[in-house]
Length: 117
Image (cartoon, rainbow, N blue to C red; front, side, top):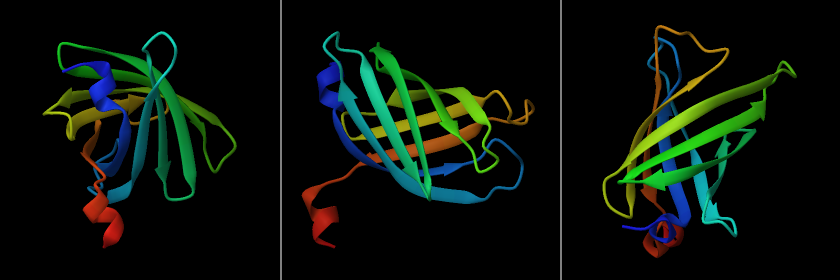
């Protein structure tokens, strides 16, 4: 698999970096820049998060940032195991999160069938 195989849009299901177990849903868009580095954009509820990263040995690593509802800037890293070109299984952590926990995300590529439903 190559970095170009990851380009596209994904449905995201995840949990936050805490012990609540609350599940969130959103989308993740992956593109590449001129150096074949990953450019990422998450839309989770009303929040937009952006990041950049790299892909090697079926592992995708993205450093991300966003501004929270409290107007503070948040930064973190997401790590995904690529289970094929359509599935990503990962975890994440951010600087202001609870250090005893990791967030989780499972991403599935959005297909034409998903758009029709």
